[in-house]
Image 1: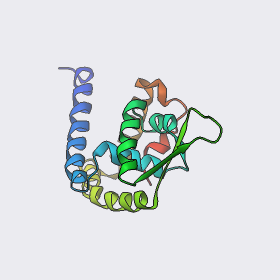
Image 2: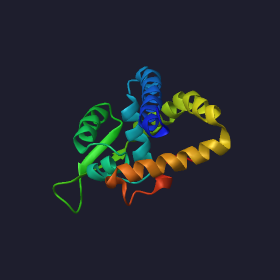
Image 3: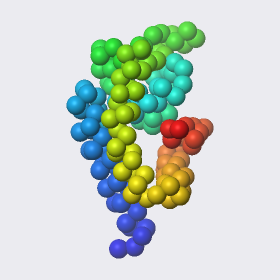
Length: 153
């Protein structure tokens, strides 16, 4: 197989490995890997509309809505009518959501350490840049979403 043929399968394998490991780690705290991504995305800004949140994650708006319903029931997020658009809702982390995210961030640290250790500091920076290019090239919805916002400091 050529590198061109291997690239999609290798990206998929890496993503699935990360997703599965993250799901196992976070499930012990009542949150899925996707819900963790949603909480992290919310933590990077003030109240966001559900549509903006879906764009920044990036994820399907109906999937984001379903996750928000569950996270709201758990008291991790608040959803309120948007002040300027009656059709939209704004979402923000609650105090419980921020506390939970802090705990989840610690839970996920060993996985992030393994990722970082697997490629080393220089290659990690290059890998993040390359993956951001791939994401932006394949997903026009990401246009206007800063590549820097896709990595946590």
